[in-house]
Image (cartoon, rainbow over all chains, first blue to last red; front, side, top):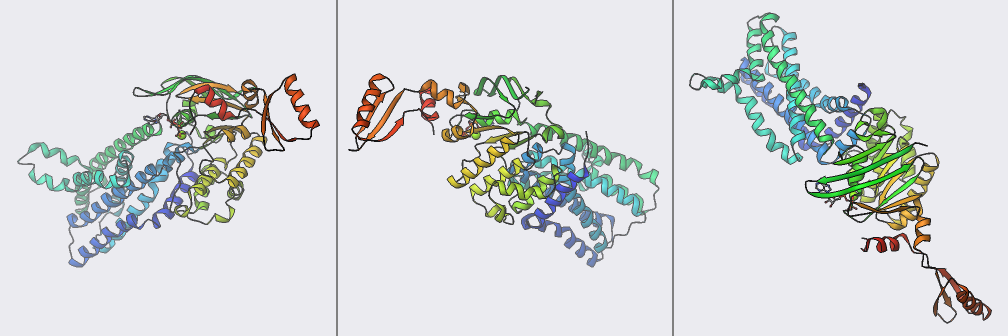
Length: 235
Length: 282
Ligand SMILES: Nc1ncnc2c1ncn2[C@@H]1O[C@H](COP(=O)(O)OP(=O)(O)OP(=O)(O)O)[C@@H](O)[C@H]1O
Ligand SMILES: [Mg+2]
């Protein structure tokens, strides 16, 4: 299987132009930034506070926007055209993810700046955030492939956003309901745990387990997405 | 010579419904092959199977000698072009930007866009947003997209169904020129006139089955009722058989200088279709 960056870039360029004219969806990009600005003004300088904004960027941009982009390609039958073109599965999925990825990273960068988040080890945090972005984009792609229309995507995305944002609060109930302990393995919980460790000067080896668990989520969602995509090719 | 398409015992069932039932045919390289049939007869279903968008329930289909399920690599994809009734465009982008994406996906120079737009008579509209186009214009953009890379094999699903007569003729000319340059064309339509003007061979599909398959010329010969209708100076119409008695009658009328026009009563493909299927075409 070949992989052509030229084709990936062609899809990205198309998406960029299309997205800038799609105000209904593109306006979402500003929400995390506004929240970050408020947090910064209020002097809210805790990991929980910073990661609330980052998590909103993940669920709103990486997952929701991505889900809409994919669902629209499906609804308007343009995904079929891409599938029939010389572009292969990986090129199409990568091309269709690049815009959401770039947007997520840019928004998180500026959110962190606005809310005054300044982690002691920027490289480790960046790595964890990039991995997490890939997970949330994969999730959005998966949901977009399942959704029947763009309208449908908002409905489908909601419960998923729920699971991946309230995960950390659920942990407070672990003493009462031990089964909720599995929530510890959610990627968002792992990310916050990692960020807290780094805040107190942890080494790479100490956050390896967090990165490992997030990576497992990434691999799982990518494999699942490819399977569902292949199914959608012949319907 | 290798066939462009070969279909053996192909069938497609949607749960219990039989959309296509055990069809066999082949399309030779360089041919324009017409797949004719009324709405719901299984034309689009067949194109979807041939382009790998749908798996057959029974039977096999080969394109360029390869099983259709194996045509998923990019080099095979570059060899065919598709226009189906489920094709879509990016509505917020211009015609040009829509085609530009495909130029890049197919590794073509941007100059191909102008060529393709000339083909469908849309050069002046290239900056227009797709959401502002009429149905016929959209169909032409999709056609331009399908021929952008001058494929060896072109699948066209009712390519002129939304077009006015002038544009339809322009596209017929273009398709013939493309065919001369070597493109094999698999065309579905329920326009019998279109099939007659364009196709080297046609297959009549009805309720998922092929009823008849031959060159239009042969079909017309086979189903000709060998009569001639003449119009006379007094507006009277006379129909004669193509035999000695008929010749005698015609000779007489010509001697009397009463003959205005002469028509040989060839059946149209539409007539033949109705006779073969016992049904009306939409
Ligand atoms: N996904 C599907 N599920 C169930 N039935 C289907 C499906 N796709 C097509 N059919 C049925 O199969 C039959 C053939 O459909 P097809 O689209 O191939 O017809 P067609 O010849 O292209 O008609 P038209 O001229 O209207 O485009 C129809 O009765 C249709 O309802
Ligand atoms: Mg059809």
